[in-house]
Amino acid sequence: MSAKYLFVGCAFLVACGAAKAPVDDNFADLAGADEKSDKFTGVMTVVGSSAYGETHGPFQHRAGKWSAVKFVGGAGDQVSVDVKSSNGDTVAWVVDKSMEILAFNDDSSGGTNSHIDTTLPTNATYYIVVRDYYRQAMKFTVTLNGKKAVDYAAPCAVDSDCVLANTGCCGNAFTAVRADLADAFHTSLMCSPGLKCATFFPADQMAECQANKCVAVAAKDIACGGHRVSPRECPPSYVCEGPGLAYDAPGSCVKRCGGIAGLSCDGTDICADDPNDACDPANGGADCMGVCRAAICSGKTAKCAAGYKWSQFDCNCVASDCRASGCDAGSYCSFCWAGFSCIPEGAVC
Image (cartoon, rainbow, N blue to C red; front, side, top):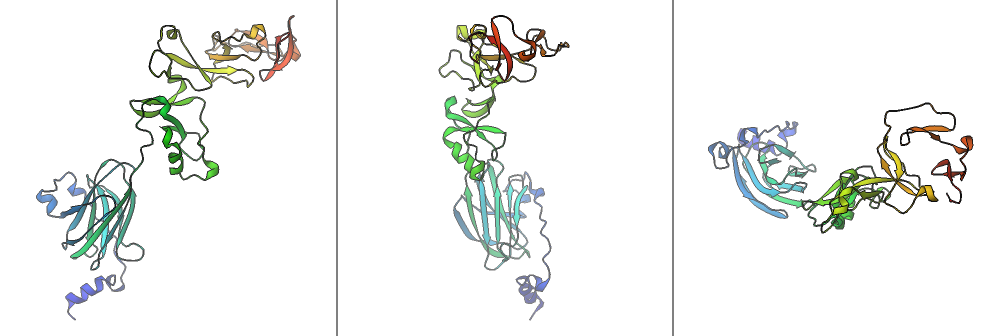
């Protein structure tokens, strides 16, 4: 047998028992080159194009060259590529328009065909690049399958089209998605049933429809109310207020506090009576909800006697436990608002 035929025979026996050398092809030299230019066609031939769910070939691959099949994909698309040959040892890549390698495979499942699974990063044109491992001529076919990514956030028309969804398996980060796609979004996270948080939402965020896209907005940044077709509302634990509401201008969302649940404020903010509701804590409304206000004495402190604490709202020492300090006439000590405090006689905590 001649040396020529001995070489070809050994090629299909993985170099007569020798380990295959690593494949390290680099397509950077073709970045930005026109497909019809001599620079491009001298080393690579675009033999066809494909869409998801299609098989093309057999194509005739030239020795010492690369062959390419083009396709258009979208951001987040999950694609699988199968390159098969009956007379060659295929090597395959998925590269973007800039010739950056996204995925690669030489031998799949113990054979000499190639299989690639990858997720596309952007909406763009991509290439499936193919060659024979031993740089010989061969015939090959390409099968391209893809699952289109779902845009869970768009489009929307009004705020009610959008909801908040947990971005992990019951974690503390959220994103805004289309309400009718929320279940599909959670399913895509592949969380176990016990870690699916489809019904839990943070108290300080809400979903809005902005420029036809669902976005998550912090409550403090919501321009609520005002004269508009679909006025924006605040999350359940916030109230919409502001002088502009009197003449149909938007207001802002202010966090609610106090009440039976004893809701607290953030940072140095304090809980003050809400003048816009009908509940007056000074007239028997012991469980009135309040609103969080900036402390007017912020930065000031004082040493208070036992049973008293410094109030950033009154700029004074106030009773913190009426069991020690007692109560003024007309009020009595009771466990209220998550602590013992003085409430008006006749009021029920």
